[in-house]
Amino acid sequence: MGKYTVNDNPAFDNMLDEHMKLISKRCLELKNSHFIKAIVLMGSYGRGEGTAYKMTQAYNDYDLVVVGVEMSEKKRQAHQTQLHKLEIELGAELAIPVDLFLHTENSLQRAEFSLMNYEMKHGHMVIYGDEHILDIMPQYELKKLPLDEGTRLLLNRGKLLLDIRRFLAKSQISTEERELIHKFISKNILAMGDAALI
Image 1 (cartoon, rainbow, N blue to C red):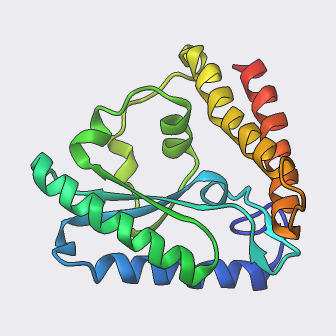
Image 2: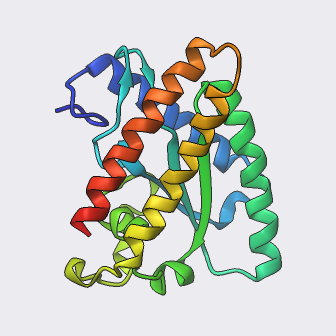
């Protein structure tokens, strides 16, 4: 087992370590970044289940939660706008999409019971700040997961099928688009299995 993937590849883990350091550094360089209490890697890499493309580059997006102190809605919107701009910069620099979602301590304490929040609480990696920051989230009982979370997941992945349809409508499909088609089909198959389990 590797740190970020199911494959043991120290070189890939070192590369992702450097990416996480860069993401943290750039977040902390933002104007008024003193509001940041922690930066949390979630998603497949946060769970240690991510995928490496040819074991040399990241294949899945980087999904991160930036946890801040309690703030007014106006400040929250201003900080989220900054983070959205940084997502674009980091995505271009690292050649992989980077998502930076802003949570506050208060919003974490009252986070709804969703599949995403359950996975975030139980499958994550803190890359900066308070290691136990997500302990403040509610205790979710998995067997009480709302059944409509399966529907939400299928709708989310169903959007990828529309992307595939758009690719296939073109007269020529690039190598990158072909790889995306395979990736999106795999995500849909996994989603159907997850929805059945839910």
